[in-house]
Length: 283
Image (tube, rainbow, N blue to C red):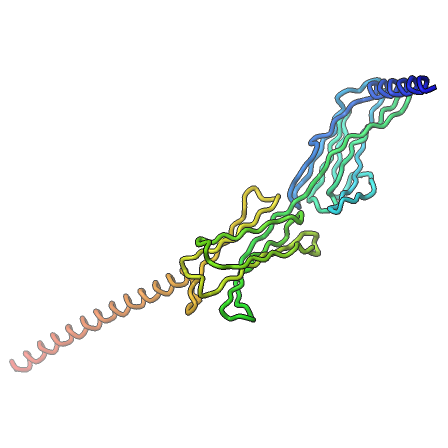
């Protein structure tokens, strides 16, 4: 009895294999696609072997994948709006403009093979979206300790949620504390996160440059932001100091020119007075 069952299973596999071999074979490219939020997605579906199909018909479906691992329902894609579908004899292309998070997931190109027996074969591709973080660094004085400076490195509007922060100090022996928070989901579907570094103002000299490095899958290279201590008694940075010195130099130059002009005028007036006195003496 078991031998008959194994023999029947073999026939099922053989018949299924023949059916698939006689069906039209198609491919979808690219097999996966990762682009930035707001860009354009483009997929091609091409029949490479028609088999014994009298007629081949292609159509597109989408199934959304969520970050928590769950899946949405499959939905047919129709022409119109942000979706543009082109149909040919043995190919079809799908174009999605201005992609958003709801466009993420699996895209199926389904092949209807019409003949003696109608069959459906599917190929799929996955669309993954990313958004690059906007990085900034700020400083503030701790309300609990006036001599404690809090540096905050922030990353905004990135996707997906995984991001890493690294703090670099030119002098690593400077005592400091680093804390990093969990990513927060924003209303537009992107994430924000931050990392803080705490350091004593007395230990942060002008020679110590502090740098924040942010890494994310959407970046081709790390993003860097750095800050240099300007000193406890002055809030003027190097650029502002240059502007002040330049302005002071211009003022001194103008005063010098005015002094020369006044002196020259005085000299000319004295000479005129001498000529006038000589003429009076002659009279």
